[in-house]
Length: 507
Image (tube, rainbow, N blue to C red; front, side, top):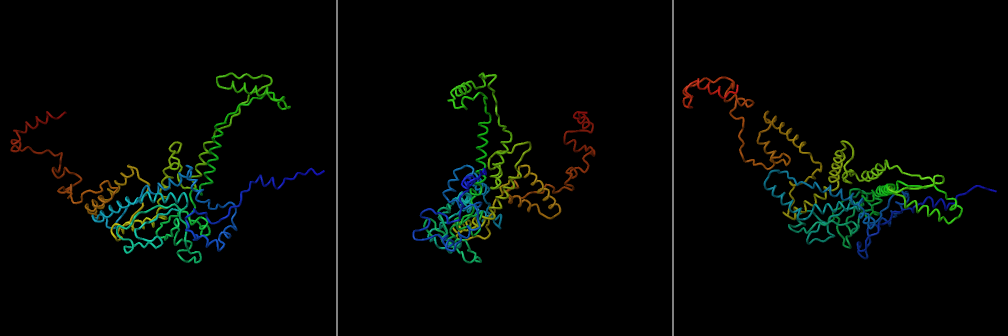
């Protein structure tokens, strides 16, 4: 007789719970995005077998595009929403400073104020904030430039010949689910438009790419772009595995805290185990439960029963839960204190270093992915206001890190000492230092009147370091008595002066 046991393939398959292999395919678009009778440009890749080629080497470890409905559903969970919202708010919180190469010119100061007012009227800051939010949630953010009298499928040329004064209608943020590429180059890699859409379908209307400012901070390889509807990798999809681990850990910790203590009663269960109805055991359990409290008395049989308290140790659970939350922060680059709003624990614990690195990263992202789009917006607004683009006007993204009052005071003190050395050595004139203070927003003296003539406090002094030297070369030297001067002051003799000094001298 063969006693060897075999495990069926079906049992192994059930135990493994193998997920179905994911395949890269064209994204499912909302109805109406592509006009009736037209096809999205992603079919060009499908015709060349790009999807079949991309699926050949990949295993189930790789993620495919989950689709816009799924990504939209993730926005309803706080963990995903907080990631993209935090980055969008931080990227637009410091905003920009409009600069000019002719700093101090009254005319240019007025133009900068007019440009800032127009940016506020067009809601540029909240519009860019929404585009960055869409980029984080869906992988792509777009801003449509609406100009009166223009055809959407024509290129938007940034020039006074095409954008007339007062012709800009609005700047509108568009969610990526409403757009899909209409045409792009998939054959010539050396061309600048290779795998870069030349035009988009926007709810059935063909729109030239120059009219849609597109922001993608996490671009995908060319092979995967068609599958993702030419979007990048969204932050929600990147953090999904880490958020799932956090949710599972959080629930497990909650369950342990809820059931960390269990009371067991060791009693005689022979009748129940031998097939009895167990009524005696049920009655014993009911009595045990009714008497179970901190104020009640539990009676047990000394010979046949034993009370056992089973407690699960809770030490270390907070660390496990914190680590699961920190993993979300690691993939999104957001410090835990900013993401959760919880200050670090422990003596002298501080997150200043992590926050400063995060702010530097935010500034680098703005420079790398949003400078070109902001420059286009400023030029379009200039054409709308003045009918021309002023080449002397530019902008800078404001850094988020701010110095404390003490740090700023120390910097000003060092600047003042440096300026004093330059003035003393004849390198700078005091008027030049005043002009620098008047135009420096961090000097504390911005906007002072430069037309006021400042008198030199040291003028007429032989030794500015000792003001007594000009009026009395030796302040401790006795001044001889002058009868004529003392008579005019009501003093008749040197004796009266000595008597008056003796009365006032406390010694």
